[in-house]
Length: 98
Image (cartoon, one colour):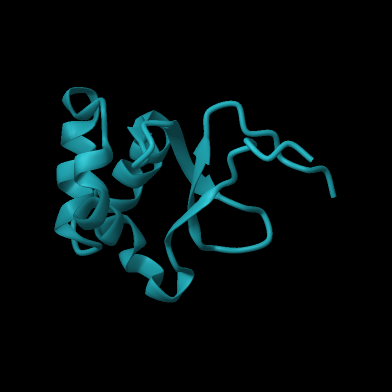
């Protein structure tokens, strides 16, 4: 097994439900490397689920956001098929086939 293989990192537990996008914005703003591109969607999500465009902005943010972890590794965000937790996936991460 490759010891240097990077694994996904849990960002927000699914127990937060509809507040996952808002909590992501509160906790991980400093890790986003392309804020100039995603600022509008970020600002909507940061306002919370009462905003009319919250879920549409979240879909766009998840697709377009780029971030790095504490080690400087480029990451994308998303969900695993078997759970609703929000994860960060290292660049080049290969999902295991079930």
